[in-house]
Image (cartoon, rainbow, N blue to C red; front, side, top):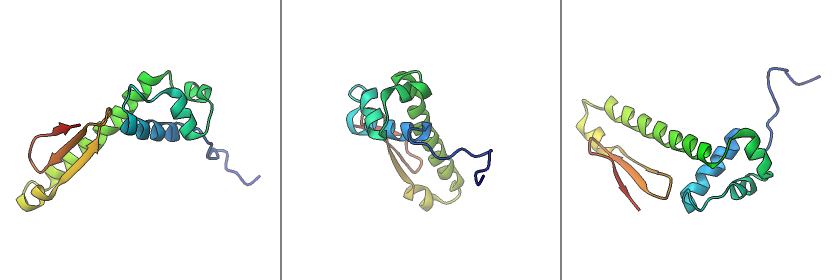
Length: 116
């Protein structure tokens, strides 16, 4: 029976795919203009499948925001790893697009800035 019972086959409409589509739509349109129906369509599923995995757009927003914050934390950790090398810290420039289309950027040891 070829399949290991501990592993599930990759299914269309899994949580990771839904979150990836959510992030892409939030980046492109903003949170307000990205609808659950659009997210479902981007993954190729029915909106009911989205609701099977998530309670709604608010949860998708919270999880997407957490993903952005995790990336920012990792970038800051990378920057602090270069604490003794000022040239390396200046080279660190990690832009990330936040919900609503704003760009947050970490440049060396400078503060985070956002722009539209």
